[in-house]
Amino acid sequence: MSTEETETLDRLRADSRSLAEQVIETFSSRGVMVATAESCTGGLIAGAITDIAGSSAVFDRGFVTYSNAAKQDMLGVRETTLSAHGAVSAQVATEMVLGARRRSRADFAVSVTGVAGPGGGSELKPVGLVWMGLSGPGDLASAVELRWNPSWSRDLIRTATVHAALEALIARLDG
Image (tube, rainbow, N blue to C red):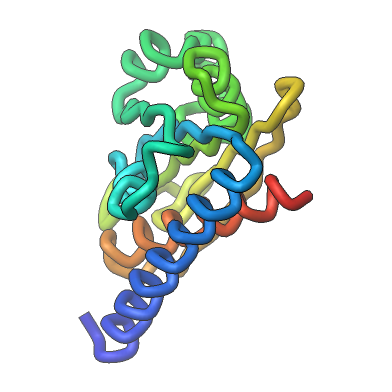
């Protein structure tokens, strides 16, 4: 890992801790709960939030759904969606985030599914491609495409995704 990549990783980790503190402060002041549905990050978003004291006031639960079967069983992602679009898609990220909301007591949820590398990418879905789903009250959901540098390490791609998810939760609550 290059010095620049190490510095970026360290900065993102520090910033993510600050963002997680903001999630807890902002969500608890409004009396709302959050849930996560994670594939490529393997629970790191939930971990970032629950690393902070007071997280129980805002964090309902996290779903780590690495396999397609887990996405279907735990979140209700449809087999037809997975077959038609693949696990790394806006459609799956949307079904994941809606599943997390419907299968929890959370007011807001975030989902991520992507290719963290170093292998597993393709021309259409390269390493560094992540789809993030967001949902708030009323089952409103959106999906956002994130494209990280494919030369980044797996650790950096996953850490950047955690950072983006925490930022998105804060923006979604404020928006």
